[in-house]
Length: 101
Image 1 (tube, rainbow, N blue to C red):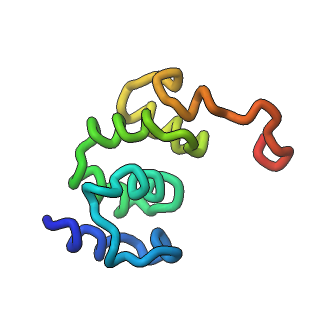
Image 2 (cartoon, one colour):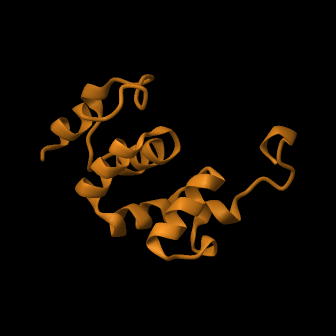
Image 3 (cartoon, rainbow, N blue to C red):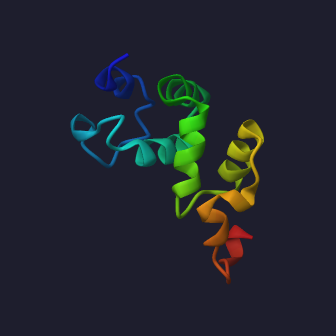
């Protein structure tokens, strides 16, 4: 499956704020994976899992500076990794806002 085909199959709400014609699956993998994890549906997850594979998704997630705690738990569970292996785990806010506790 080509990059453009894959991007066209994503839920329309994922990339509402950017020009999808400029988006490339390989060049913007970190951005795409984070968007799918935080805002995507299960079909979007299956699409990136098929395109990238679980190993690459896990490696990209380990580089992310921020990732929703629920998404972090999800990726740790399915990849059998520890939260401490992820950059976002070490960059959590020291004083989180009250509505995120």
